[in-house]
Amino acid sequence: MMNALNELPVKAVLFDYGKVLSGPEKVEAWHGMHDLLRLSEEKFRELYWKYRDDYDRGTLSGTEYWSSIATDSAFLLENDSLIELKQLDVEMWTDLNSPMIEWAQRLQSAGIKTGILSNLGDAMEHGVLAKFAWISGFTHATWSHRLKMRKPEPAIYAAAAKGLGVEPGEVLFIDDREDNIAGAQAAGMRGVVYTRHADFEREMDRMGLEALLRV
Image 1 (cartoon, one colour):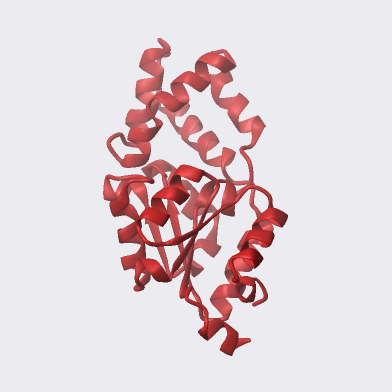
Image 2 (image 1 turned 45 degrees about the vertical axis):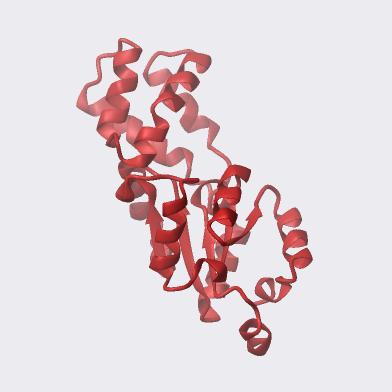
């Protein structure tokens, strides 16, 4: 098996966090946030995403993000509510995609570099790291807010490859969004869009990377 791995052009596997290492959003947490803010589902969805790019990029902190939403919704944001909103936001993204986490850990055991590249704000990063000790097993994690950039901006892929200690052409990147995969490919990486696990495995086979799946 090691000979087959050594012959592969891929030397590192880079994972998105949301909907790749994690599962779909927890509906209960979503409802908890818009109920706390006393907003309809439609209005909360609008405001949740209105400032999200700035939050992920680090232009806004978690406190500033929720303060902006509260201001737009005429909600008096006190400290207890702020803490609860941050906690619910983290909780929404903490159902795990066990097949991908288990595969990442097998790659790590086989000596293959693994990384995380995620559009994530500061409070989200802190919450996820506090909840999941297994994240420390990755070679490197690139969190967008720390770099003041986000996928699919070209420089973030270069930063992720540098953090892994490999060339972009030696990286396989897995993300649930086609625009993020297109950005990775433009940066010289290989990329796979992740939707369903069975489809992902078929695409890996098609790309001639089945040896990575068998570790």
